[in-house]
Image (cartoon, rainbow, N blue to C red; front, side, top):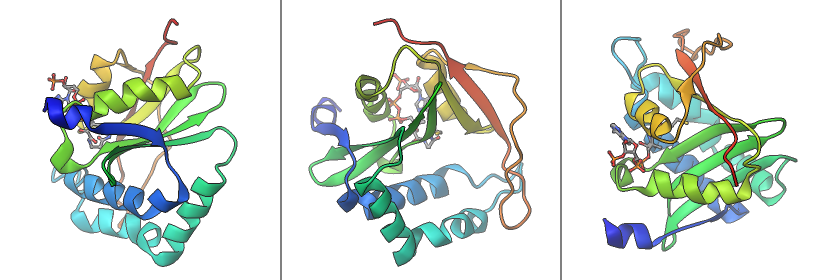
Length: 179
Ligand SMILES: CC(C)(COP(=O)(O)OP(=O)(O)OC[C@H]1O[C@@H](n2cnc3c(N)ncnc32)[C@H](O)[C@@H]1OP(=O)(O)O)[C@@H](O)C(=O)NCCC(=O)NCCS
């Protein structure tokens, strides 16, 4: 584990990382979000990523990474040339973690914690942090609780998959981090 940890390098993503970022996001989502209790299937996830995985989707992502919209920060964690994790943050009045994922086979090796810790130096730590997670995503909830996040009571706008299934989410937040 120590060896893996030392070899993880965090940096801003560039346009050449687009396909790898989408692929890690897709594989992680397939491993995380299908859920019998909430009726969310593998097909829901496949359909959700259809556009992103297309050549046009990858091109759009690489253009976005080459010219990030104001306030958008995309960081990658790599081992050698392999993208093993990604953090996408939208920075405005607050820091909103829009996506944070570690490749399934690389999870629980400290990589998420390392990516989070290093991400902070790119963010405004004087602002609050918000993230939305699936209600049944217990690993993510434990991960964020360990980082000082707590669940809020905010009712989030509904998101439905193409099948019509609702993706049930909760919001978590944490306060600014003292310098
Ligand atoms: C949640 C996620 C980002 C955590 O990254 P990670 O690299 O696996 O986490 P770490 O190894 O740094 O773990 C840090 C702590 O988080 C908690 N944690 C992480 N994975 C956990 C799991 N599967 N079950 C319970 N607790 C877990 C533990 O407290 C862990 O500390 P420990 O290993 O000393 O017990 C990763 O599992 C992931 O990408 N999940 C799928 C996508 C996702 O849910 N993203 C978050 C929503 S945006």
